[in-house]
Amino acid sequence: MKNFITINDLPNFKKCVENALIYKIDPFIHNGIGKNKTIGLLFFNPSLRTRLSTQLAAQNLGLNIMVMNLSTETWALEFEDGTKMSGIRSEHVKEAAAVISQYCDIIGIRAFANLTDKNKDEAEIVLNSFSKYAKKPILNMESSTSHPLQAIADAITIKENMPKHKPKVVLTWAPHPKALPHAVGNSFTRMINHIDADYYIAQPEGYELDSRITKNAKITYNQSEALENADFVYAKNWASYSNYGQILKTDNEWMLTKEKMKITNNAKFMHCLPVRRNIIVSDEVLDNKNSLVIQQANNRTFAAQSVIKLLIDGIS
Ligand code: CP
View 1 (cartoon, rainbow, N blue to C red):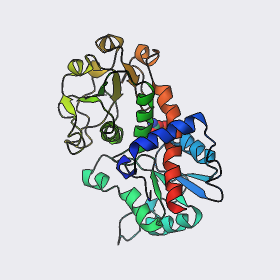
View 2: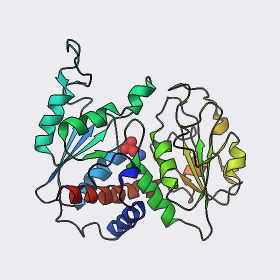
View 3: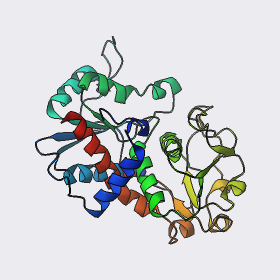
View 4: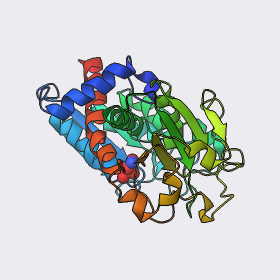
């Protein structure tokens, strides 16, 4: 695999999940394959899980690892071509990416949507600029429009908790005080196409995700209807897509509560974390034995390991 930008880049999604489960049993079976290779993990935004799990995954494969917070630790980067750089941006991505590519064999990047300009976010300027000027394999650690490592971890978690029947899986919008990107919802929805499941997305009007991505999902504005007999409930906030980046609703009517979970089929609760307690989901749901959030976070390591192995294979 040359780059990992979305889960569509995987040569075989099912195999990637199976390999991740093998790494979960024995993380060190491919401990030598990263020897004398270096991965650089570049963060334009904060992270707890992605930073640590990707670092651990690379370490399990024997890679050398360099991590840098580009938002605080280095020169502010310019991404526009032909700009007179008289402002706060001191270095162009052309030089920065070319320089970093001399130090790294694989480059992981986290660069969120800014949620002010849909066209710019969808152009994935940071990821694509590094890909263009670094000419090294790019590992998406959450971009403007997708979070594929999270989606693979979610697929592993669903597989580990799969009921005997075809499951009903619900992605439900939940409230949040800040405008959040669409990346997790997009990638989870793309991922579900690889699972035999009845998939519903519930959200208030105005919060529909990109219809090019949700085309195979059953969409409803009625959260209770979606939750009925659900086997998995994934709560997530995102800002409006049509009214790009706007917050249209902040009340707690859509928060996941114990009462709402009662109408499910004893559903497992999922969230990518970090999660705001008693805003997105009540304490009782999050602290319940049916909550999978810690298992999801654990599976981030093995998802990353499975993907990085494919990127190493691509350069070997
Ligand atoms: N789920 C996730 O990506 O967590 P972090 O933002 O902490 O990396």
